[in-house]
Image (cartoon, rainbow, N blue to C red; front, side):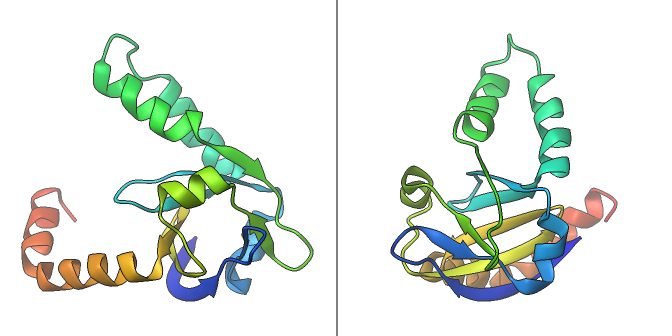
Length: 143
């Protein structure tokens, strides 16, 4: 399980330092892919395999299913966590999420999200301001 919010940097070679508390869960490698809301998703390989199986089972005739599969699977890249706890983030994924040097790494149970620091601030502020509406919507889903 990944939880928490951490400020990190991406170096000039595109390497992202993974929070130390996340590293032991990523010993078999990771998959980095386009996320939603303008961030990147990082999955441990086991969690990725589960998600990829579900995505690949979506109905091919559905335009939305094809679009989601392309978003998640076509841009995915396998990576290893190096001895210093870093993951290489390809340039095309850094561009997708508008990542510069300063990023926020968040843990969201089965995935890690990587946000541009400024974009995360805007997103988090909006979510905090709308927390009551979000909570009501979650209550309707049984959360």
